[in-house]
Length: 74
Image 1: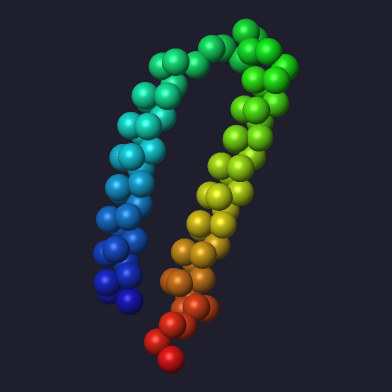
Image 2: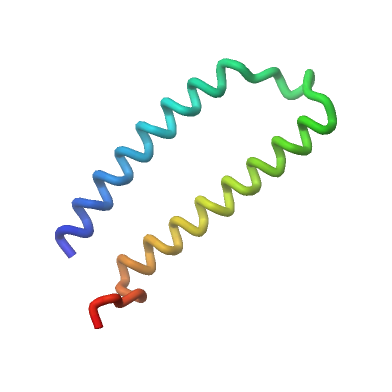
């Protein structure tokens, strides 16, 4: 459990740092919501929805490993 906790903390810190740097890079090139066309708004909504789904799946899988639901040491 100790290695899992350390690995989880390091992974979260790395993910946060990478996410912030990517977000800042991409965010500089974006137009305000009011200036987007309907197709661009639709594409952005789909991307946001997909990102939320991936985030929720990642949290659920992480909790599964934490509570040892997935046991690969059989």
